[in-house]
Image (cartoon, rainbow, N blue to C red):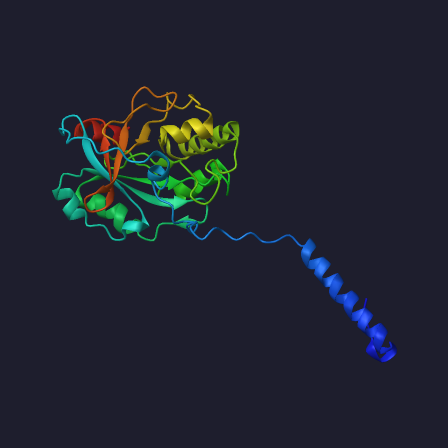
Length: 277
């Protein structure tokens, strides 16, 4: 209601003004507030493999050096590492690498070309990974986005199958607001679409504690999808339900040159065989 001062005595004008202000206050109080992200919440797109491991599982040392006949050293990188010194890593015995390609359906790693091609050019077997955000888009849509932005596979013995990084949500609820059954459905949709698009079963990167919490200990992927286990300790520890062995192990976030270091569970010849499919 509009108050016209020229038609209303002063006392009534004051009443009208008071009523108008009261109405505005009531309107503002009834309008839902826009929630602001917590100050320590990272920006969307900035997640990386293992972002939640230390906070949730901690660190319990590093494993002793492994013989190359049984374990093959690797690394995983994202935009946090920037341009990577592949020559130094190669000289130190690193034989394989995974690079973050994408996240959700809107982010791609600006350093992807230098990291993905640089590891290949130095002689490493390389692959790409996708950081899953099940709260932003469906599994199939994110698999499509991943394949379209560097997550493909070729049978050349130098390209590893794409990896799905499914772990704690750095932007909110640990399980992305999904029930265990809904999370399993999301993961299944991603894996099925990736296989349809590439002909390979994607690697699943996860931590046992997250898998137990957010999938309810689902055991249905162990027969088809290789496991990349995250655990910063002297051994891999208990594996998620469904897997009796691991293919890769992220064992530290404080290794030389890039931080994240990994081991392939086998010799370099077996690594090449795994890449070939």
